Length: 567
Image (cartoon, rainbow, N blue to C red):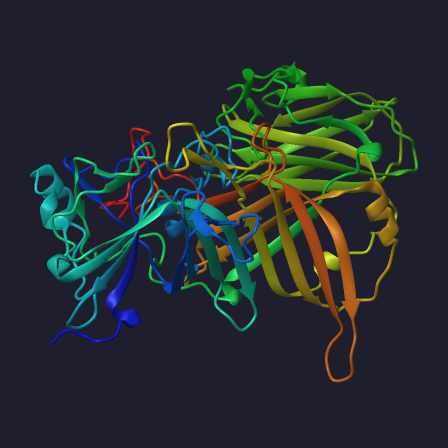
């Protein structure tokens, strides 16, 4: 018997392919929809844009005419389980530690891609749950290799009603992790049209002809896929993240007026050679921006130097007795940690206390060394390894004047919530001869916001006005781990600026603080960006280890997931 009401267990949400996009793996002749997981709510509105027409001599409106195309708004809310959903929707999700994409900005693909993407809501007209049983993903490559892509379809598809929202554009993205609630994403889209089909079988993706406002169809057959079991040997894919799974770190960048020296290598520059095998400016990996310096040590000790070589740079003029911080981002290509030395000598040839060494691994990390300078440095800072034939990467070298005491460290308090919002405002592009919008282009610049709610658990010290006057920037990272403590997803924020901090106290509750930051998303040099990194799970090409680095086979090629798929 047909049901007389629609409830959540008979609905499911899918995303279609954007123009030029392909499924992974590709099924010739078919477009396989991409299922969105952990969905909590769906809503949509249809707004007709009308203009009221009045006439002289008439007290009422003469007409209310349609002045432009309709707007279909679609809102989706889901619990975070990694960055699989984001990748399916078209966000720029990077494979952790491996992406060679020069622009790492999370919303980068929305600048000129993700056209003609449809959102589908499938509704089972009768019977039990829409997803039904779970299928083994090992059949996917066999079916595709046998040119049987149709067999990937849900056996109940003919009993689905399907609603298609055409030409959808992401309008906003909001993320919220708050104590007591599951981390949640709220995302909004705006589309051009909505269609309802009485069956989910035998469909072809509908395309809206913006010239004629007629519905056309792609040649591929539309497939609503079975509910495939998700599995991965290196991460628990069925784990919904909790606030306790999140770790948040915040680091403060040096103010420009305090910088004594800075190398970010974005201009293609290199450091001077110091007995190295090779030094080159590369775009294959970087801490932030698009470039870093790759250094390879030699395979033999360098005579009286007693090391395997590296790089060097001329030391700036520093004042003896002043406080300085030496900051650098490092990454080793080897899976085994290696010690990297930074030697700074004074005029007498002795090592200054600005010298230090770190044990670096194959994940980008920022290392800082703060001292009250005990002697005036002279000559060079020598950077080297005591390991043969090793490659390491270096970025964001900075030496800057620092205060004796720490400034107000509001960001070390007990976090109660972490929220960020990315507004993706759209500009409707009309064109003569087109009945629908030719495009809904992203309006630049984009200014994202970050809000931190905290319990105040320390006494204030320092001067907050120093922070505001220096207009300092902050780098933030929020990392989510699965049930085994394995890092599975990470958001990174580069170059956020502090807008405000507010404190509140009331009887019967703890003292609280709220800090607000903003970031102008940079699509050019990538110095101020939001970056999202996912761990290998269907939508990412490769498997990674516990440090989210690519696993390699004996021949040096990356190891792919056993049964990867993007739907």
